[in-house]
Image (cartoon, rainbow, N blue to C red; front, side, top):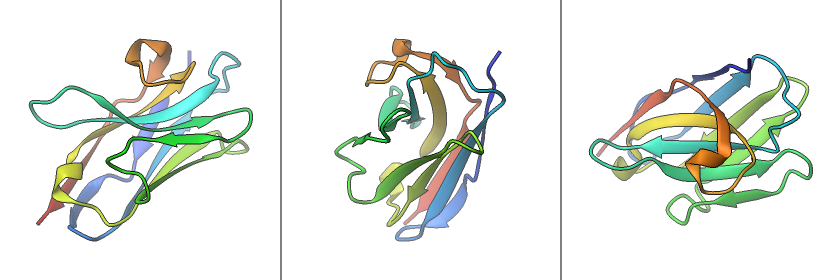
Length: 121
């Protein structure tokens, strides 16, 4: 069974940067994409960024476009989320996921346990 383990969360001030990492325990041929989702207190989980495993194409939520960058190192089987110019509204638990792709949670078979990102103003 694939296990996803996130790391890199923490407490930063507005305008600072963080890089999240998510390492998979094994490669799965069914996972066409890797993604980052987030859930803020009192809000539904929302998609942040998606990367297609085959061609490296990426998609971003409008709220993070031009500030966040998703990347995937196939040799390390690790996906990253570089977050720049963080804002207080980015505060959330961030989850990595692997699956078919897209903005529908049910299309992702595997999820990490989440890592907290807190941005102070």
